[in-house]
Length: 185
Image (cartoon, rainbow, N blue to C red; front, side):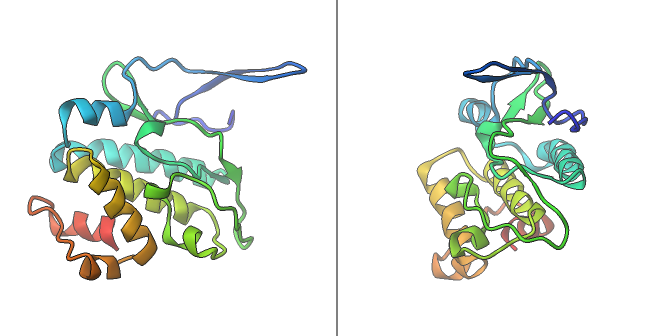
């Protein structure tokens, strides 16, 4: 965790290891999490979400370049500072990955998990984080939060693009085609 140094990754300030417990002292962010923020304000307009999403993707790329796979990217694990800048947090499930070496752990939050995890397919690591971040952006720009959003994401994870046909799913009319392609495929 100490190797992660990006403006959109929550900083690990100190680790205190006692005989009974390991404590991680993290940067304090006062804006809550993205889930609570979206619950209160509703969806984010596409143009408004583009810049913050690019910063989160840059943060994720930084983590992956350093050999860290997060494994649990979701709205609850994106914390906001006082300026509503999102930062990746909660690396509890994170692990090291190495090019050429496959992982097979099944972990994360089902609505944001990559399809291969459900199928038990081995994976390298970063691709599961990229899928999850796509699910986060889909949720952020497409809907007020609801159980149907989670079910749609879960269905897309299981079935991939085929789910769009099987579920008669149409993307929201207000999403531009490149964003739809990024999220859905």
